[in-house]
Length: 68
Image 1 (cartoon, rainbow, N blue to C red):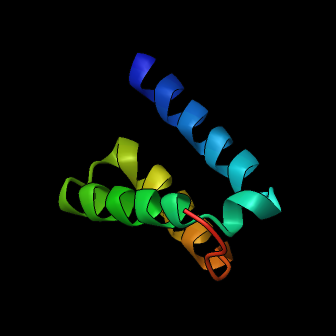
Image 2: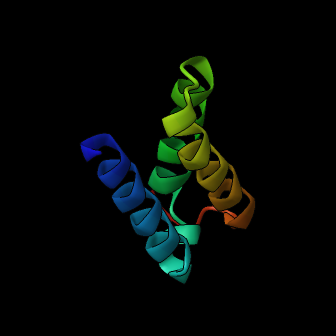
């Protein structure tokens, strides 16, 4: 149950960040999402698949980097 709550919280934070233009243009955010995708892809479980999908959706929303 605690793991589910943590993943839900991470998904909410990703959604909040990708809603902000400054975050969609941040090179650090882009690198973080790429790292999350790589790590979640290497260790898929039922509890992390939803988070992986949200990371992939967030990557699609990224814009060209204006700063890091």
